[in-house]
Amino acid sequence: MKRIRSYSFWIVSIGFLLVFPLVFPSLFYINNMIEILINALFGVSLNLLVGYTGLLSLGHNAFFAIGSYSAGVLLQQTSFSIPTSLFIGLILSGMFALFTGYFSTRLTKFYFAFLTLAFSQIIYIIVVKWVSMTGGYQGLTQGIPKPPIHLIAWSIDIAPRLNFYYFTVFLVCGSFILCKMIVNSPFGWILRCIRESPLRAQFIGINVRRYQIIIFVIAGIFCSLSGGLSSLNINGCYPEHADWLKGADPIFMILIGGMKNFLGPIVGAVVLLFINTFLSSITRFSAFFLGVILIVLIIFTRMGIVDLFLLKKETWGKGKLE
Amino acid sequence: MNIMGLLDCIGNLSCLLTHLTSAVVIAMILFLVASGLSLIFGVLGIGNFAHGSLYMIGAYITYTVVSKSGNFWLALILAPIGVGFLGLVVERFLIRRIYGSAHVYQFLLTFGLLLVLDDVVRFVWGFDFKSVPTPKFFQRPPIFFFGSPIPLYYVFIIIMGILVALGLWIILSKTKFGKVVNAAASDPDMVECLGINVRSLYTLVFALGALLAGFGGILASPMRSLSPGMGFPVTLESMLVMVIGGVGSIGGVLIASFLVGLLRSFGILGFPDFELFFVFFLVIAVLIFRPWGISGRALE
Image (cartoon, each protein chain N blue to C red):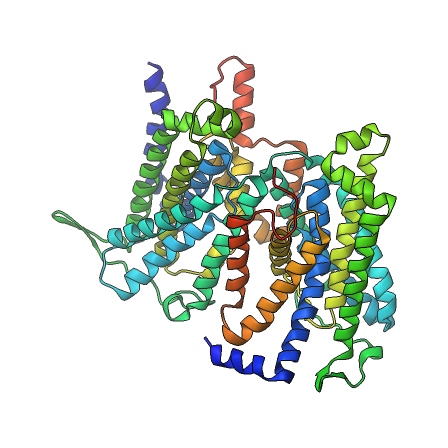
């Protein structure tokens, strides 16, 4: 009974996403939803590290950039299909994550965060200076070709927005389901154990570094998928995505939405989109207000929206342990 | 890649000296900013991602003072006080809340501060580029050093950098204040038990760190154009220098600043697009093989 109840939330949400374009058929809503989904995947992948394992990775957008540019360059310059290009991006990100994760996890706290930042800046420099491949500061602006995907007998063209919407829903929800499975498995609980106290985890025999590296690679792979989707979505790849400034966006999502819960970054993605859209429509100084919101949130409450919501549920006696 | 150009320049005395001078100048500015950052991180344990914004505000205050009064020396006095005071306020109301917190919150708070300060600068001074003219005193023919011309202002920066380095060293190792600061960096609880107001000490240290960053901005302002985004690369670079040099050691930061200055100045010659690459490689190598830097404390 309980299992059906907890699955029902997911079934309802996915159902909602599937019928969303029928209820809100305008392109404006569909485009925003696609953006929310892609950002949510970015946030969820980072939260695997920050919220579940306690690893503050400031260089996560390197994987986003790798996924984005791999898909973009391959689709523009080769005849690989979309799934293949995305997949190659995943592999490249995974390799980079393995390499950087191996070295970063030797350090803790600030030094870990800073090393991930340094590695991501290397990607940024490559992206910006390898002009022949990546278009330098301009990025890849000639548009990303979207050859139809051949699936057994069907040919799926994701160029039309509606089709791309369902393509995104499929990939992102599939990723969410995978992530949720990872997080609720014994592996996921070991991650939480590491988050609470790496020292104690070591004392009970957990090879902390191995788990950290594994989740680092997993998070990098999912982030790369969001990058690839993003390049297909905006029809280009831009170096700003690799800069560490942009890397703060997903952390912001995680903070606002709630760090300790799976849904947190998803809620955070929605809220961030609203805030950004709202702010940029009323003022040129959106960064100021964003900064103030951040500061106020951190000073007064460290909990995100979902955390507060769950806290209320707990005090009423129906809470979930997370 | 232009290795031949690099080797040619090293062979040519005047080219070598020009680039050495620019390396030293870069190093001095970096040293000022990075020593402030290292002080803040070493004593307070906060990685201040808004440090470059303090540098930027120092530069912008200089711009205002110089354009209103035409007097650079006035700016040299007022601007550090201004940035130091800003640091004091920031510590008292914001930074104080995140001591000992998880590093996510430290990062986000200082990042929020960065966003706020940058937009304040945009609001007050505008979005476009500003420039501070070389102070009249230094608009003279350059000094010749072994036949190579060195702008007088560069000499001033080098002298100021050396003075600040000496001053910091004296303060931190010879005065009572310095000893208290060092003690608070190792064991703040014990220091508090001994009757010293650690909260005020922290405020002072943060203000000092901010003052140093602002001072770097002041000295750098006649040499670089001012824009609201000028703080980001400085934050990143000063963190690189702090990590390479090792936290808790002014000497280490100084040596690291020189290393980075040399890498930047000669890197531009040999590898025109990738000079930052080497700095990042250096930092990554340091973090992998020698995380406590050149002469820093052991990590926890």
